[in-house]
Amino acid sequence: MALSLLSVFFTSMILLLPFMDGSVEAARQFKVGDHLGWHQPSGPNNSAFYNQWASRNRFQVGDSLVFEYQNDSVLTVEKWEYFHCDTNNPIDTLENGNSTVILDSPGAFYFISGIADHCHNGQKLIVDVMSPHSIPHSPPSISLPPQGFSASPPSHSHASSATMLLASLFMALSTIFVIVLLLAP
Image (cartoon, rainbow, N blue to C red; front, side, top):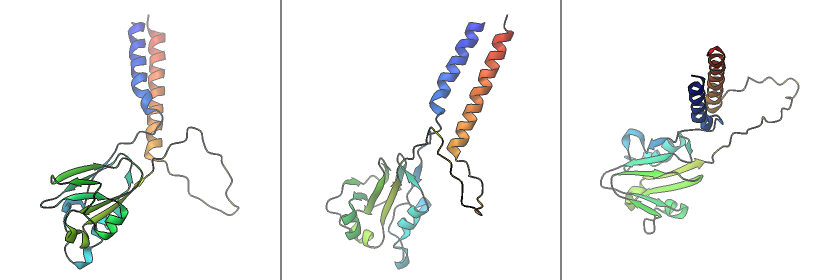
């Protein structure tokens, strides 16, 4: 009996260990333009529509963009081609009406419509992908704030909350295992 409990315990621990560093975050998928999709903005005042959409989101390495469109295309281009709406030499051309682009590195990604007039009318997008943040394994040094300085307590990120939850689960399972092992005949 003790041997089977031991195997259950170690199997549980092996399954939990990859999550114990707290750096696990799921990649997110963003539909470009939300419910409106990828289309030529209507009206002269909507030329910044897609960049306003992008400014409301935070993109990280591993996230993806979904472009949904009809009778159009999406071109991935360099900065110069973006600002000049140059469709002649794209990095990539997407034409299937439902295209996904994985943001695989930090930095700026530039997208324009494959129809030059649409691009000139604002159907273009810059996405700035944030660098991945590593979570330090040792606590940072603490310095005292200036006298008279009042600060609110630091907020905890979802990653540190998840780490605390998993650490608590680990301790609870360890405690239960020891109690069961001591009570086993």
